[in-house]
Length: 339
Ligand SMILES: NC(=O)c1ccc[n+]([C@@H]2O[C@H](COP(=O)([O-])OP(=O)(O)OC[C@H]3O[C@@H](n4cnc5c(N)ncnc54)[C@H](O)[C@@H]3O)[C@@H](O)[C@H]2O)c1
Image 1 (cartoon, rainbow, N blue to C red):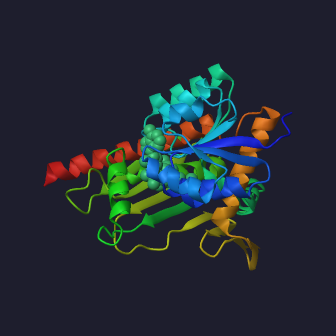
Image 2: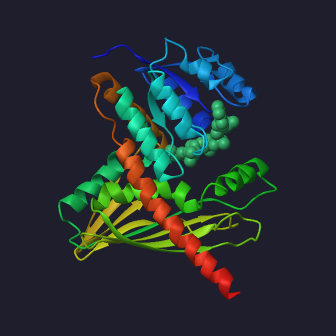
């Protein structure tokens, strides 16, 4: 077993790398940040100015060629991520790649094959499944505290419309929409939550989409109803680019009770009969999820064990979100035909 710190590089120094991954590596006792790179060198240089132990590599291929790096975080846009992930595996690195692991199923399968061929490990960045809140929710479901069948109600509305106030954010998200509807991007987390909690195969998916501005390359508000083979059902709403949004719910209702996960107030609660149980998190929820995610990645590398969530979870999430997207596109075409 490898017991020294894992020597890491970060490819892609954009929003999530700078705000979360890099500080998480820096603070982790079992990880060392040795190198960073970005297609825009000024971004990597800004990181290196703050973390002088990290050197800047101009090209990700140079970073991958280094013998002193064990593992990389690939935090690039998802249409770039799979190519770099496969190159990293072939260069002998373990990879924590951001979600979604690709924007189509065939490419995700290629990543999975490359992982098998090289014997290196891939963890997919379904960050928010980690930690005591989701674990409590899962235990309540597994123990039958809610009964069955279950209804999952999930909504994510994180990307508000403010192109003048935040033009860079607008351009990044607009580019992202050219590679799939919000269901494929933010939906990746939701699909993973469902995979993690419902633990049943998807039986059917029905989706609808709304495009609130003609210049959008795809819908910006998707609604899906998913049925599972075990009789559970989910209603999923993912909305981008409206000036105001609802809070975004995460509830599980069953014949015996109701569970609520409030990520803003950082608790999960279970109401059964007249009793309510609550599990609260004192530390920052997102920061704790990123820390636990990295710790699990390091443990997998050290023990040479498969990562969870790995490429199989990444593929399952992608197949569900692509089915959602397909339904959205069919609905949009029907709506256009009627106009
Ligand atoms: N796990 C999470 O909670 C979470 C949260 C936000 C974003 N994400 C995911 O992380 C990924 C990145 O998102 P972001 O918001 O940081 O995007 P971003 O656009 O801010 O950052 C991506 C960075 O990758 C760089 N890049 C692109 N091609 C490159 C290449 N060939 N070589 C090196 N660098 C390259 C870009 O210049 C940019 O700096 C996306 O897949 C997104 O879905 C995950």
